[in-house]
Amino acid sequence: MKLLILSDVHYPNSKNDAFDIIKKENPDNLMLLGDTIDNSKSNKTIVELYEIFFDKVKKLIPINSVYAIVGDNDYSFSDEKKTLIFLNKLNLANKNKFLIKKGNMVFFHGNLETSLRQESIGKSILKTSKSFKLDILAILFLSLLIRTKFKISFSKYLFFGHLHYLGKINNKTYVCGTLSRDKIIYEKQRSYGYIIIEHNNFIFKNFKIVKL
Image (cartoon, rainbow, N blue to C red; front, top):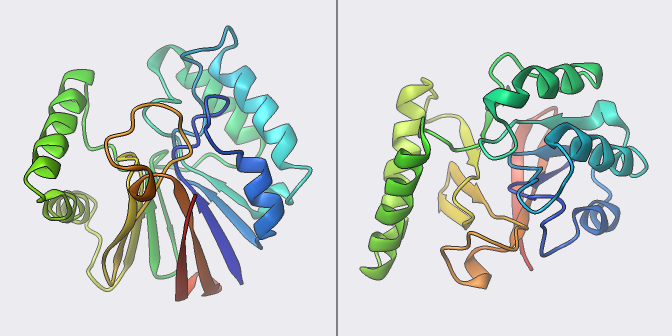
C-alpha cells in the first residue's frame, strides 16, 4: 500500500498545490503531518479553512483513508474546541493531537516547544547549526528528544515535520518537508517536497523522497 505524507502544507499560503500532489500520487492513505492550515494571510478562521481544505481532499481520496495531526500553527487555544470538534466530525481527531502511532511507524508534527519564544530560540539554533554545517546533527538530536519524550523505541520508524526540512536523517528517522511559501530556513531542494511510504498494514517496507 502507498502512504503519502504531506507536512506543513500551510494552506492556502502554499507554494505547491497539495491537491495536485494527492491527485498525481493517488495514494491508498494520506497522512497530514500538521500545520496543514495557515490563516495568517486570510480573513477566514482556521476552522473555515479546514472545511475548505477537506472538502477538496474528499474529492480525491476517501476521508476514512486520511489521518490528520494538528500542528502548532494550525492550532490555537482560542480555536481549540472548534478545531477538535471539526476534526472529530471527520473521525480525524487523535488522543494526542500532535502524534499518531500506526504499525511500526510513528508520525509526529515535531513541535516540542511550548511557546513562541521557545520556537524562536529553536529556529535560531537551527540557523546557527546550518551555518556551521551541523544542521543534520541538530535535527538528529531533536529526533532523540522526541523519541525520549514520547518513549518511541528505536525499532520504530519516526516521521516528523515542523522544521520545513526534507530528508532522511538515519534509517529510522525522516523529516517530511513543507509546501509553505514562508518560514523557510533551508534551501529549496532541502525544504520543498513530500515522502511516499510503501507499507503493509502500516508495517514499513520502503520509502521515496519527492523534491519539488
